[in-house]
Length: 475
Image (tube, rainbow, N blue to C red; front, top):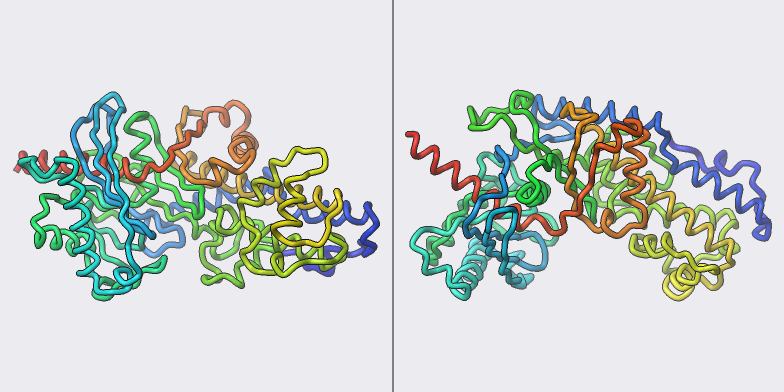
C-alpha cells in the first residue's frame, strides 16, 4: 500500500523553524518504514506460497532453481581443487588445499579482464581464461600432477543449469557482452579452451555464488542449512528435500537433499504484500529494471541509499529539512551511498559531527542544524531496520519450509550490508523473535561467511568429482 504525498503530510506546518513540525513529519516518514510483526507474518506466508510455486514448476516469480548439488560436506574431505570466479572487472583463480577438520589453505591470483575481452568473441575470453589458469597452476606446481585438476567455476551471470557442470548462458550483465555465447553452454566453451591450450583441468561444477557461500561454511560447520547474500544484491540458497522439488526431472540422486538457489530478489514483483512506500516506487520507476527484483530493491546495498535519498528530498520539498535547500549532489540519483547511511547510523557524537561532514562536505548541503542531522540519522536507521526485518522474513520462510521452527538452525551470510550496517544482525534477530517468539527465535544463529564463493566452488568440485567416480564405479 502506497501513501499519497498530499495526505501524507496533511496538517504539517511548513515553517522550517518549527521543531514540532519537523518532528511530526519525521514521525510520519518513520511510520512508512515500520514493519509490524503482523505484516511480517503475512510476508512469510506469501513467501512460502511463492516458494511452493517455484518448486512445482518453471518460470515462477521466485525461481527456486535446483543446483544439482546434493549431500553435505563432512569437513573431513582432503585434496587440491581449483576455483575460478568470473563476474566482474577481475578474474580470480584459486587453488584450495582441503586439509580435513574444516581447515584449508588457499593460493589465489587476480587477473584484469580488458574491455576488449568483455565485448569480443567468447572464444577470445575463454582462451584468456585458459592462459590465466595455465599460468597459475604452473606457478603453483600443480601442472605436474598426473590426473586432471578438478575446478569449480563460479559464473555470476544468468544461466539455465542442466547438470552439475552444465549451464546455458541466458544473457550477459555487468558490462560483459561477448559474441557467440548467449544460448551456449559456458562450461563446454571454457573446457574446449582448456583442451586447445593443453591445460590439465576439468570443470567439475558450475556454481552460483549463494550456493558456494552455503557449501563453504558447511565444510567447517556441516550443520549449516542455509546460505544468504546480503550485500550489493541479495539471494539465498538452502537444502530442500528432493521429493519437495516437484519440477525436478534429473532422475534419482544419491542423497535425499538438494541445494536450491532461490533467486529470492524477485519475491513479490506482483506487489501483493511487501510494504512499498512512495520512496520505493520512485526508485523502482527510475531503475533500469522497473517492477523487477522488488524484494532486492528494499533490502540490498545497491538501493538503500537511494530509498533514503528519496525520503530526505520529500522532507526538503516540504521545507522541513535543511530549510528547504537541497544540493546538486543530493539531487543526483544514486549519489547518497549506502556507506554514508552506515556511517550516519553509527554516529554517536554529541553534535553528530560525522553526519554533518557527510551532509555538508560530501553532499554539499549549505548548512544543517542539529535537528536536521538527527532527522537524517533517524531516516537512515529506519531504512536499514526495515531491510533487516524483511531479510528476516525471507529467512523465516525458509525455516518454515524446512519444518525447522524451534530447531537449531545455522545460517551462513556473506555481504557488506550484513557485515557492516549498524545493528543489522540485531534487527534481523529481533525480527525472527517477533515472528517465532523468544524461544524459537533464539534457535536461529547467523554466521559471517566472508567471500565464501571461491571455497564453496572448490568444495562443490570435490563433491561432484567424488560422485562421478562413485557412479563410474557402480556401472
